[in-house]
Image (cartoon, rainbow over all chains, first blue to last red; front, side, top):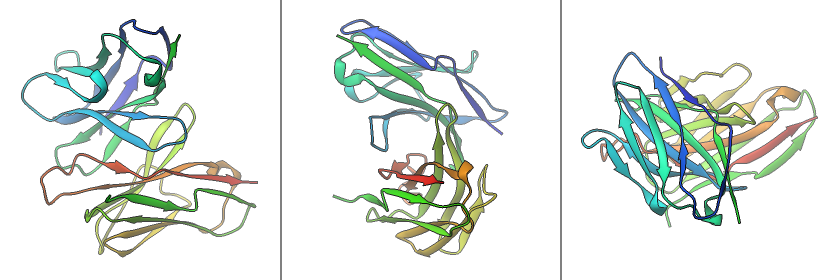
Length: 113
Length: 115
């Protein structure tokens, strides 16, 4: 079975500052990794995903994440945040068959003007 | 636009009542999922279905049942609702046909309150 740990439940950051949202996973098998964003009163949208290949993955809205197999991490970064980035962010893993998905508990990002 | 829709969007009910949440999709995807979201707990998988004849329990299926009426429709039922089933419920889909089955597309959610 897999599990996902998001180390920070809330992250406040000033506008135009960089941000990193941390995600660690545990799994006995190879996995696929995802970051989703949830804006208030909306469903989840895919930000980016790592399936294979380059460990640095670029997503929408200027976000990127780096897969580190030795540290079993998949941290999300953005060099300069905007007010519109205020949302809940979820890290998730699935097995290669896509049979089940496991989500972290979420990180609430608040961008301060 | 191809989409995932959920009805109702909000529902308040009483303990012991039977409730059905419905999910429809126009994406043509074969796989469908039901999750619940609780504050501080993230999303947890309730049931998933890979086609009309395939139903599988997820992490927290107790107290829930599902029906896959067609490829496009996947309903979640609470036979006798209890207060700790108060949560935000999401339906999601994915497509195994393109090989991109790991990417899930979510509906807008149903907020259920059980009094």
